[in-house]
Image (cartoon, rainbow, N blue to C red):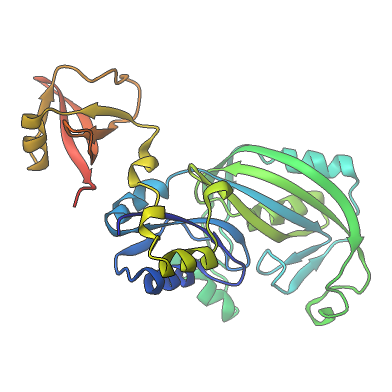
Length: 319
């Protein structure tokens, strides 16, 4: 099978758990996910099967959209609701202050990766060190928040207080919460964004819920639950439900080769082209390549040479 399954990941599973599940259900050895989603989070997790795994490097570069719940009043070591409290704030910001703080986190930002993350430093994953109580120096990373929208701000008692006093929470404490939607670049930690907002307000904060609503062009509207995927597999209809890999590249321009050009291109020969089928000079160097019958061959790369514009293969997606 070759194509993409847009999975609606449930809470409690890692991205690798989902891959392992689909490997068994689909009977597919060549399979991979397109960007880690926290175990506690839910939402879209596109999974590539067969030759579509060649698109993973492109898909991981795409921007994402999340809907997150921020709880103010506590900061935790994991920056989400699963961790132990490391700071309890006494400041109680009003709605205007919360709106201003959240709204200030737009544009190009520097974000310090959390210790509880899969980033490797000196060959060791940060979360492995964090679980041992170790903290290492990390370098801030540049991210971009394209847009952030506040959907709701409210107040409610700390429902975890009585069960989790040992972690630093106070039973019955009134907490302010904010629900917001954020459109951001790859590599953005929403947990850290919530932590940083709480820090800016002086009261502490953590992410209490997260849904990824879009990864690249794949949204909740095309996502399938694991139960739906299992049912499709049992009915032998999973393959026909796969999303074609060429949808990953719909933003790229396209070019159609004649029979002679297709033969040369498929054998690794660089093509010199006079006509670029409307390709603009300031667009991506990558281009969708089709044969004379309209079959998607893969992604080519345009480059200049003394003899003019040439085309070489960047990634094949044909069997």
